[in-house]
Image 1 (cartoon, rainbow, N blue to C red):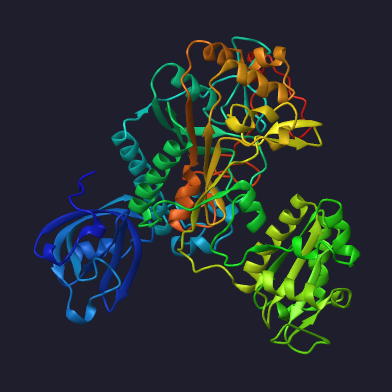
Image 2 (cartoon, rainbow, N blue to C red):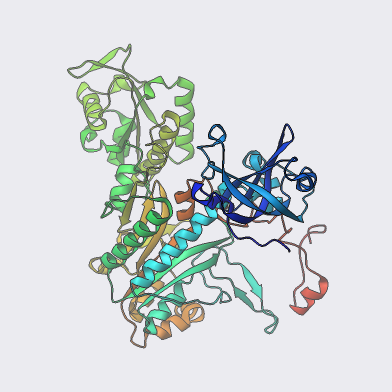
Length: 603
């Protein structure tokens, strides 16, 4: 390599005019304008325009006229101001150009499978197959730079707050109460396996027992589960743990960190402090434990107003201990009957007995209230004027709206109306504009929930979450009523982080294991090392973990975390670029004492 870089393409400005620079990068475009060659050279900082005149640099012109897009080249030349009419105000370097006097070709590129400038329009499977080319796109380069700034800001903030960054093992043992593990066979222990950690949960608790008091880690984690836009088989957590703290201290620290890091990475401004909702409030008002506050409508509770209703469709559900809840859909009066029928079918598929709908305004047999709002509904004739007025009053319904109602069990009504709220936001454009962040804390989650498939209670977060002290008496008698000292940070309907105060008392951990149906023998087998550690003066401790990929995705305004990960997997957890996962040789399997049972042709 004869020419070595002395400046970055995207850094040149008018103040650099008259200086000599050596630039290195990729040919972004090449244009011949009446003999003059105009070449845009690109590196990770941006573009610089080269101008080669055959009358001034004949030999160099002969060389450069054969350059093609995505060749890597180096040039040495002088920076000069562009003529006034040739300046490009849309480009940071648009006031200057470079007249090369020397050049070197470092690497030629064969025809590309897709153009870098149109890469975002190419099918994702092709882009992942040639990910190293896809990553040349400025938008992805910018995303990964943003991720770097975000990660550094996290490290700087936690370092200033007195945390140590400590790595924990990636080869550990498989433990229950989580997603499916990725297993690694142990050659030195035939028939035994390591597991890749789904999180460093147990290790960070042990670090608290060890007396480090403030730990964090940018931790790699693995979960063998079905994928979606915000999920990958391997992902990155900002993992944090603190000793001698309660929920307030953890949430304050975490909130300040996110405010600082996202402000650095994307100039995000968050309220101080963030608003809070209990789990029960979030489910009642939004039908979700991760509510999207950009949607300006809430679920209304009509149960009290319909306690004496004669309409059996509502009264039967209320009389059985259920609720009647409703959602106003601004502009929903325009819904066609076929759309309403489709929504009713979907509501039933989600567990509801049905869906009641009311269209407001226009022509109608029934007019309600002093304003005489027309109400159209198949069930309007079964309801009194007072009940219809209560429905309009509670939902703030007005002409042009629709009101959708569900009478059912509390959890079913929340789930169906929560889904309808998101559907309505998409259908009628009810969310605030792009770029708005609406963040909050959701607290006081249930500690346990009943799993009908397993026929037992399971942990809502994980089995090491501490119950609220005032609910301890209910642990054996009403497990579903016990609240956890747990908290999630939610941004725009996405959970970006979650944590809890942990159980630090061995006897309390045994009670929770018992509530989960984990026997003493199983607890000793799977978690014996943790239980033993808790018997040696464990401090009260708690923490939180944030999805770094999710935070980066939101800061970048991307639609998927794949756009903020250098080499992501596809929807089937595969890597089209390297061909992973792949078949390994019989010799490798023999070394691990493994025999493949895959069907013929799949192994």
